Image (tube, rainbow, N blue to C red; front, top):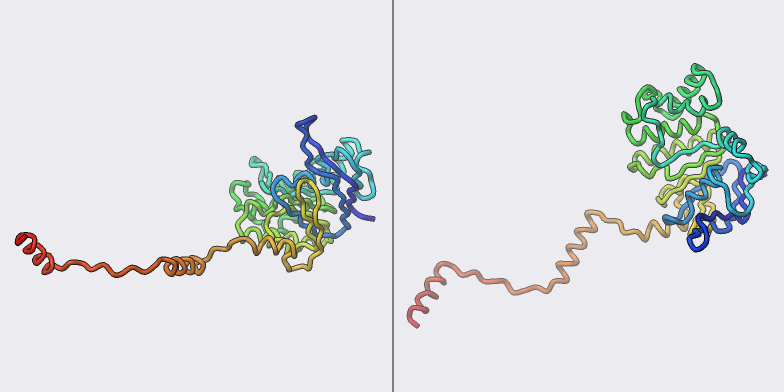
Length: 286
């Protein structure tokens, strides 16, 4: 049985002439244990798809089955409970509460379940150790680097041992080192616990971590590609290698080409002091 199954799922916003089609009859099947990257230009429907899969939004049309259950039949409280127990969310902006310590932020989902303070703090601390920032558990979010803050957000997503992790641009606010840290961590989680992970990205290089890449455009899935771990997906590679890459060598080559393109001019002869004197005498003679 598939973990996620979407059949002709559409999502519309607005009414009449102002209607916007965010998802257009999407069909998608995701098995347990897959590591999926979702790519596409801004406005292609990636975040809306994540919201529908994560039970943050309901489809306008179509059928969504989550672990064999129809989402349309769930009451709001049932959807909230399923979301809390089954799904972990990682956001681009981290969404950590600044007034709470890292430990308290990570333990928050357990507080919603009614777990006693001592037990939830112990469990949260263990998760922070797993993601490598246990030494920062009594820090506040504004005292963390971007990579550390995202690791804390990942720990919060993991604390309930979810079957599904949804990450919307998890490396969008990070530098290259922080991005690698986060993706290596997600990869380790995927391999060790066989957790299903769906992440949105604009970076073709990050498809190296995925086992499958889904491409979206105008609210529809236009391509679905399986890929080998460690390799950039074929379609993503086409995008990657059409982007201009500027290096010092490129700049020097550009300058060299420019110099060759400019026609050479005869050297300008500068008048010496002797020549200027002769010239002045000639003017007087005239």
